[in-house]
Amino acid sequence: MRILPRLARTLGYELRPLRKAREPHRRLVNLLERLGVDLVVDGGANRGQYVGFLREAGWRGPILSIEPIPELRDDLVRRAARDPAWRIAPAVALGASPGRAILEVSAESDMSSLLPRTARLDRLSPSSRPIRRIEVEIVRLDALPELVRDPAQRIFLKLDLQGFEGPALEGAEGLLPRIVGLQLELALVTLYEGERDWRSMIDRVEALGYVPWLFLPGYVDPRSGRELQMDGVFLRAEAVGTE
Image (cartoon, rainbow, N blue to C red; front, side):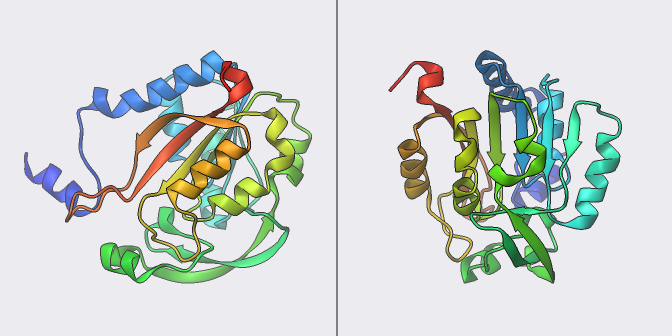
């Protein structure tokens, strides 16, 4: 059976015992419950993996997923039909300014980005090179009608946008009084041209009034074993009683 872990590592994944694989998501769900979160916003939903992790770990609260690739968004709509607490926004991308932009759709759809790939990413993951480019609408999160109209006052915002987390966070600033927590993909190594590195993202989030609370493992280079990305969870200082 050792062939399966070896195969997973060549694809950039690590097989772990199921209980250990679930543990970070259970910790996250416990955090959501302690914070009294009344809506999770899943920015960059892809195929709904994040929602699946939360539901498996016991989160039953409302979720709003946002995904710009039309066929993936359609799949989410079909999946959400079985979950009355899961809503799907229109097929839009998140950014700092409204408009339109070109999204490079990767052969591995969770690597699709509004930013150009670096040569390093092409070397590390040739199988995820773009297979087509599509034009998408960009909206500010704080102008998205599905959120503007939502009564939720304790929102947890997750952004996994392959390097575009910075602009998307800027476009969420009007919602910050209602956002008690953030989960952002952080670049330990630059994989997309123009993305902020982990240091500047943490500095930016702290300047907005959030404190680092939890870090979750991300994408690992299978050849070197180096971690290239991780997820940072940040909580609003006033919500957790720390300054």
